[in-house]
Length: 251
Length: 193
Image (cartoon, rainbow over all chains, first blue to last red; front, side, top):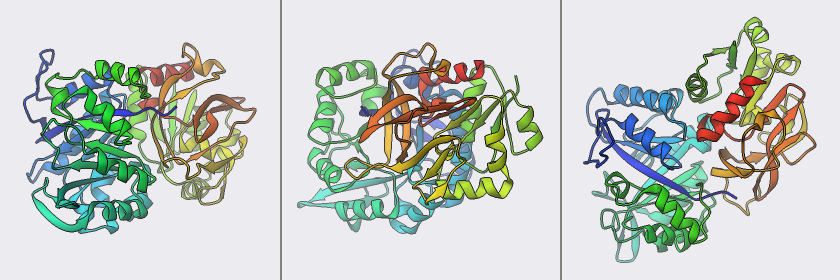
């Protein structure tokens, strides 16, 4: 049986992890490769690296990082952040990334989804969507949730699927950072209306939240950052609990 | 041991190279016929779309070479699918090594299948030391149905072939290079064949 995936997300700036990471056993808390290896060893099913640097050299730095991760890590990983062209993706995949995640660039140029799917296959194209519930309408936002668009979450998600995305990473801006749980109602609707996997993001605080997003939110995977980085939740414990709750996981 | 990865423009070769390196070996990426023929082990990768991948193989003549190889050959993901008779993806013929036609998952399930699934009914030395129902990483929209060449099964929508074998030819639908310790053991087993 296909299992539900647990995905730690690492924010990367200039090739280094950002946000305080509370791993006492890390030699270098800022080294994404070392952190990725630990996650791979301790039960993460996949990893997401989100690059938030804004320098001229960012493309090269990210490509180098991908190569170093691929050398050491034996589970799949996705790279996102500032990817806006077929050429960007080509380098990242050649260096060993399994998937890329695009967000703003897909909104600005939806044809990019078609182009990437045609050239590299749908399986490596993740479209990330950030949305906020504004008076009952889920509005897609850009730039980390700062800039609203005209797009409705469900319409955009449908379009993204039709254009050839292989997966959707949905972050609810209302839930992100709250530790109050995932946006399960919207997630369940996405999962029902679409026929590609949905990754839940934003709001993880407790192990129960993961159970809820798999059961009520019908998510295929759940992504979180701080609860893992600060060891508030150990992935192994989380998976044991999910299993107890009847959710298929890889242990 | 000389290990080659067949180069025909299929994606994510780097992960396979690194996985082999983590096992203590070097794999060379090549489309050179002499070099492929001289190798002890041949890995036939593949990510992408079947009919365009077959066109690339035909353009380079590798489609004629691969079925004649005598050393152990491991097709991975699309590589395995191309070793079959035909694929529904782009309605293409394949290399005809495995006597089965690749078909698409129905829309009763989410397509592509992405994630960790189980492998069962494990046969041959490729799965030495691998427990039944071990988890491996799969990413695919098309599958090879169960046949008498099936050496591992999995279930998504239907029971299907997670791996195939005929003589010196092996194929895995899953990605051993991305399947953690289980995948490493399977690659190690292949290198020992």
